[in-house]
Amino acid sequence: MRGKREAGSGKRFGFFVFILVFFTLHASRFPLHSQQPSPQYISLLKSPQQFDLFATSGWDGNWYVGYNSMWIVDLAIAAKQSDYVRAYIGSKMGRAKTQPIAGKPPWIRSPIPCDIYLGIASTPAWRSSDSYYLVSCEDLSKEGSSEDALNGVGESRWYWREIPLSKINWQGKNFLAIWSATPEIVDVSSGPILAAGYISGGARAWLNRGISGAPPAKPEDSLETPLAAFGPALAIKLVPNHAAPPIKVDLVHFQENPDGYLWEIQAAGANIERIRPEISVDASQWRAFGVSVFNPPYQVTVSRARIIKEVEELLPGNKKLDQAYIRITAWDEWGNSAGTGNFSVYVK
Image 1: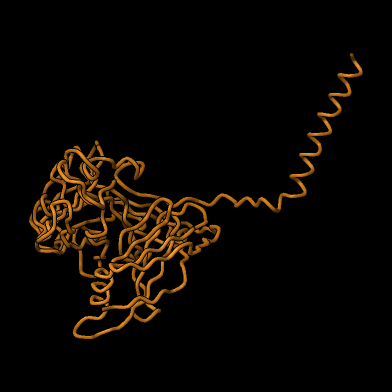
Image 2: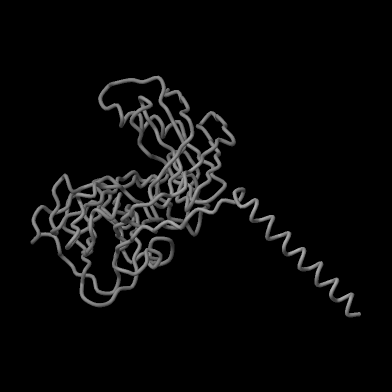
């Protein structure tokens, strides 16, 4: 019996040695990327994930972003610019409003067009150079209906805009503000909803319902109503020096329909954050547009009407263009990106 047990033990030992040698010799086939330093998020709460009120469903709190409704936060930073390579300002929003389409059933609705802007300054007063376009309301998740099945309804999301590192006040206050420049967005029935989270302590957030499509140019006109219970989902994202693994993007499927186009891609990389189409009229300067895709399958649909609208904005006046260029781009958490090749689409 003893000999059998020793023989069995020897076989098990030999098996473990084989496994150890196998993985040692084949380690190069299973490369492990070194851990990268995560971006630093600065907001009123410890984590951007804590802003989970109002903007997805339930009571909206009248927290709309509008032509007459600007939200402000004061975020202090104590860091060295040399430690970072990129800076972003962002906001978490959702529940964009829709409107009926003449001649269509009630569940076929179009988004109410509006544009959302962010501002950042070291004082609660913003010049035009302190303002940045963030997102179109057409590209936000839509507010649902208790009576109709609407397309495009979903959870609120964070949207980010890269800014120069020089715009950050590295050893002091940074006042972030969000508003809409669209005159028709003046109440909760027309404006998207800003996410919020529970806050406590001294007031570092304000609401200003006295603007007209632009932030105040004087500090004394800005901090109108202090917020004590809820804090707006406004944040700064700082990207440290890093060497994130490259993103690889491959086209899996393409389909052209009478009303538009559909692309499906595969994206490989670390912490893929979103997939979004980009458009260009010269295949050189690109602009992101359309609804982002956050989870696989990474399928992007773009209508011909949206392409025509984007081209008209890129070519102001009476200029005409027969075709434009589309590519599908993936971004990771650090702001690195990679995309497909360029696709020509006809503008008619």
